[in-house]
Image (cartoon, rainbow, N blue to C red; front, side, top):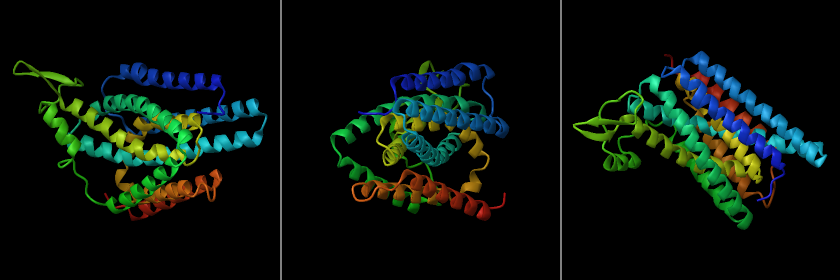
Length: 316
């Protein structure tokens, strides 16, 4: 698996991630269980976006210093930005499902932060494995690009038809399976994952929520990772753009939670983006769409969808 990133930049990336996890699991843990407000979520969202852009600037400098080519540095930093934006966009749909899970299980707002923190850690590990495996497969079998492309197109079409429909977890097969193998208490026990009832140790609903969030991220990773491979095959850029988008997921969740109704048409835009990225992947051996064009299309679709959503948002 070839990458243009120098070895020391991998080390810097790992340091960034470890520092971010330290902030989440050590520094912020001292705050205790509490409901995250819009102001706090907005501040953290801006902070994570700033860190991501800072890393992209470092990526640009490192590639220019290594290759001596400004054009190459511009191209790779643009690939990172496009991959980051795509992952951020698709994460919105992921967040809506998280909202559904939290609502279904009536998770108290004070406990939601811990669930998301653990979910993010699991997502980083899982996606790192999937991206490295995916990069190896693409290196060995070029035709997998067409499989990825067709999958993204079909997923986009499915998302379009499902957009606007009422979702429910009642008939979710994963939830039914979890309930069969995992005896669950009816009540929460603080932030504990297990409690004791009638002398038996059983799971709390919070553990069920963690499991559902994890399974949901597996499903969405299958969609989002091939989408970034359509932009670049460099495993470093695929991995870093994906992980930096995930690191801001917790803050973005609480930000969108307060304004979910205003983005009621966003899934239609995400569906079009998936079809576009899938088509780009299918045409890669015939015509390679420039990264700048891909970035412009994604930004344009998101802007149109969000403006349209704001204008047609139901009054609350």
